[in-house]
Image (tube, rainbow, N blue to C red; front, side, top):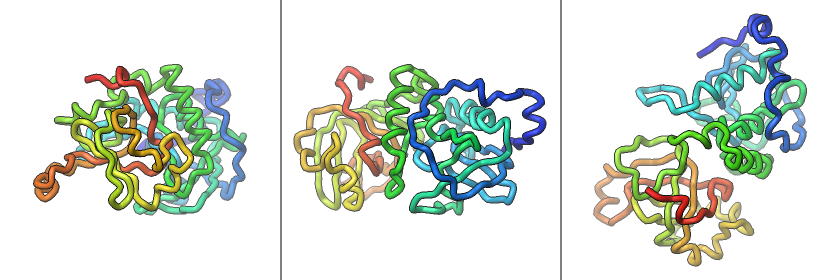
Length: 277
């Protein structure tokens, strides 16, 4: 963990925040619910405050640093450094809350802004140093973060220019580690039991729970049209879950990899040639 000592940082890189590119300023102004002091930046989506609390940024996921025996993901340090630069001229952080206040690890869940009003999540996504990943019911900034991500992808910024972060074909998952990744593939089967299951040709099934289905209604992934998706190619982002050691699933012919999809913002329709081994 790297400590942010505001005075020292300022002496080395004066006013660096104002020299940062202003990509991704499309998210609406946020009302700050709490004004806190920053102690350290753990990684691109997690901060530590001087009172000992940890903050997990809402609606994004940044590359992971090495932890618990898992390898560091590409651009993890760049993402952390971008957050340090974002707050280099201040030790003050503004927090804004939605429905959920904490996660299962006890971290505060919040949108984070600079005292000037600049939106940290939007900045990181537009730089290509994090991916938008809104989780219900906290969807206030889902659309603007999705737009910032589209801009970063088209411009080839950050992780969009790195091989590791390109979508892996669902037919080529052998030997990879469970992690947050992007996957692509052809929809080969649709099952509506207990929600919506989308099998991709290869080794992966996408799951949308019954509870989350209403968030997809009216989108490009409206569940009412799911049977028409067979044969089309999509890209999905989320946490890969390895189920290959579950013998009961093997016997029933289920896919060894699963990804939970919470909102349509985690999916995109793509052309077949964009998903080749």
